[in-house]
Length: 222
Image 1 (cartoon, one colour):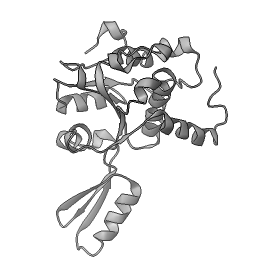
Image 2 (cartoon, rainbow, N blue to C red):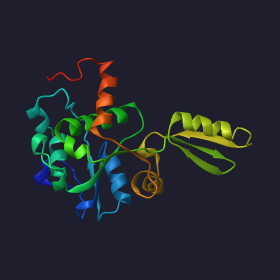
Image 3 (tube, helix red, strand yellow):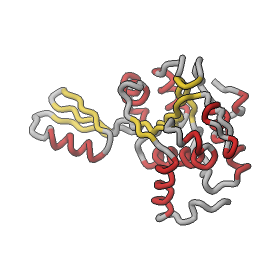
Image 4 (cartoon, rainbow, N blue to C red):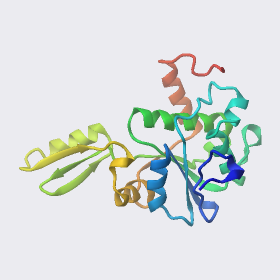
């Protein structure tokens, strides 16, 4: 559903309620948005797709970031205000959950979202209400028993654990599109069973430092 108040290109599937108990899922695109919207709690969980790879907010001029068709509406959706005017108490959602595919592109997209929050909404970021969702990386089925893995090392360790079984199959997922609705709900959406990692400005600063070792001009403005 398109909400004009957040920009004509924003596709926010909003929650019925807002406030501390509400959550905003930020996902990579329309297909991921539809998959999450199908299994979310519409009363308190909203979904906003990125519509392509976000702008690098660490490099881009302020005006270009604010006018970006995804980052601008993201800031408006959250409702806290930006930069010195950012007040976490005004947030329309109590939590922001960045849910991307666990591949290189998905990780990069998630990092770009964090760069925006780090530069423009740091007080909100530092409330501890921004989390990265960890979708499953793959599965091992051993004699009919399914075990999920959430990283390549975990997948390898699971394979080793079941190596003595007579019938073992291994499958690496290709993002959310490879998961059925029940699995998306259990592993990514349901607060009781999903795996998440909290992120603050300290964590993002460490990520920036790591990236700058490879790409030294990360912090320069265009």
